[in-house]
Length: 583
Image (cartoon, rainbow, N blue to C red; front, side, top):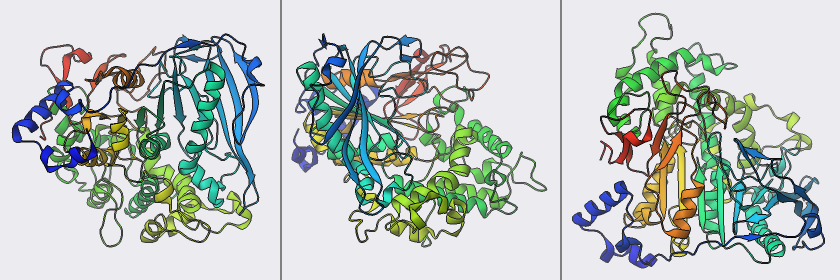
């Protein structure tokens, strides 16, 4: 279906069409009337690499690329859960070596590629989290304690450091390094990787995929808009697609917590302690747990919960000293202002609100709210997202004081600087870090590509409500038919990418491939809790009342997992994806 038809008044649905579309969304059925004009891509074809890995060394050449090594990795050297990764070739190299114009330091785009002997004909770009700076193992595995991943399934996988080494924490003083980190490393690595794949297997990849969580999710969201012609499917986890603003919001939140009377700035958890957070978590569950039909220490209908719960009325106000069972009025006001979304001095929210969820007392949430502003976001904002970056003598991180930066920061000024350009810095942080027009994925759609996005509802650094707002804008751009090519999966209780009071172990890559190559739109994705004995690793924040292998369906937005009223509450089969109460 053409972009003009998607946006045309002729395609605006009638009330009956809206009702049918809603039913389709909840049932998981693909509507041929809506998707028939989107091309169906063919399935990838597998092949076998008969030659030795070491014999490839003299064959691999690509523009602006140095291949440092090619070696054989025997079966079982890498494991995922209880599974052995099959024999494959490990290629290590670097691209675009240079000396930085500003700081005189050495830069290159480091990478590794893992190429299976038994190749399934697919390529996956593994986008990494944090500030990049390290070439992580190219296994293409996502979610909490993953039991499968791209390499295990036979994909060729690339991983990179996005153009800088972690030994240079001040990399973004170099204008090109900040652009490579933002989006240009992907543009350079993609054709190189496909060239190497062609040289190794005698053909390029039949299908190409892109996956990542956190900053990796941001990379994936950027690629879905900038590089949609290079990839067929995108798996996007917890996308910090507006990362510079999220980092500024984190600093603003720390300032709000510090304003609470008797808070120790060197220990921000004194503003809102674990005991107090647990009291609030219990109050949220009391109001929202049963909205999905059963009390099970999980909140599936997080949207309805935002109306049902009020921290002002549903949590006791302290009448004497704080003892963990209540909050003072200043605490309530501060917490509520953070969850509603911090603002500039004119009262305008510049990032996003956050939902109240049972995971408000998760260790992950406390780390992101209390430690990260000082230890992570201060440096990222000061030295990467500010334009120009703060002045540092000799470009040395030893001359930067994160706490001093946070407590002295003017939020209005930080918001202005992530949108600014200056001198040799020709792009603002919001230009080089964010997708140009995230609601416009017409190229991806019209090519027959697909995108699946998941986000933990208890994520404290990138808000699930920001991702929800993106999906709503995408849906509006496509007149209510975004689900022809895009799905969004909120993960109840999950923290940032994994963990929390959640069923966080799931495989979204397999259903994404089936949707791209066979037209099988996912109806749901089954997720498992990682209790004792889980081969992917135990999640120690699971409630003791849960079975060790509790399962739940993750439902495509806006549907929510709803209890059937009679089945085993520990099993996903007892739940169905249905319209939430808030609709």
